[in-house]
Amino acid sequence: MPGGAFESPGLASWHSPEQARALVGREGRWCAEGTYHVLRKASAMTARPSRPVRFLASALAAGALLATAACSDDDGGDGGSAAAEVAASPLAAKSPTASASGRLTAAGARAALVTEADLEDDWAQVANAASWRDSLLIGKVDVADFLTAEVDAADAADCQKLLDALYGDDLLGKPSGASALRGFEEGDSRLLHQVAAYDKAALDDSLAWLKTLPTECDQFTATDDQGGRRTVQVTETSVPKVGDARQGLHVTVQGTAASAPATLTLDVAAVRVGTDAITVTAGGLGGGEDDSVERAVEQGTQRLKDVQAGRTPAADPGEID
Image (cartoon, rainbow, N blue to C red; front, top):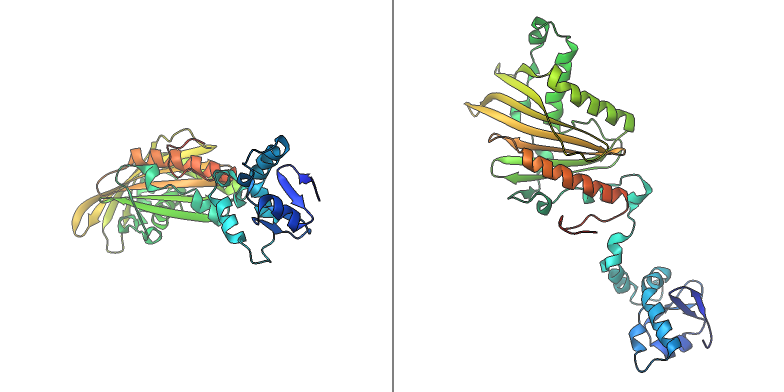
């Protein structure tokens, strides 16, 4: 080629902008290494192209993304629009994210959260999920119940920990890294999805602790600050076989709300994926939401795995990579 040659597959360079522009027009840019890279003009070579030119056109089209990344924006050209084209391209969805290094980032945690499309039904995302609290979960566990049943008093502490964790939305303990949460409502029911990075040993301990609760805290009572008593029951539920480890719980709290008898029902699932984990809690005064929890677990686990692999989770759960 006059005045230059290919320096890398799919990326055409010349040391003279006049030579480059004469061939492909002005759609190019001077770069830091003093060469001229063509961003996009393969289509200019369509009038009865010779075999070498056809090869060049294909190479230029394939190298457009590389050329955009290689160029500097110092000349005030159209680098911003070119970069936008790269971000919007199908290849961008396959590009590694910051989470591909193995450490969950804040952006990666947010990307791993499920969406309304993932949940289906009539779940609607809300903006105030971080402030959700249910007063029926506030109470002091009656230790006497455990002592009378000749059960170790430590079990009472575990049951208190469960109530406090459900109220504070930290069932797996404090994250060691990035975290994100998203909430949804459907009628009187709520669904909360959390994604976070944890210390591996602490995460395993938390999951092991959850597994003991259906036995240690199968039924107990708690008293609120006004003397009202709540009866709490905890049973184990199945969780889809996804991730590296998992545990599910079904929790009911019978008490009083707005001066009337009420029962809060919560379905809870936690899944570990490497050193990260998701937690899904759903339910309300109208009953549990085991089907929605199962779907959120399946979709949420896949989204987290996509993020960990450096992929962008599909916007529609029906999409296939």
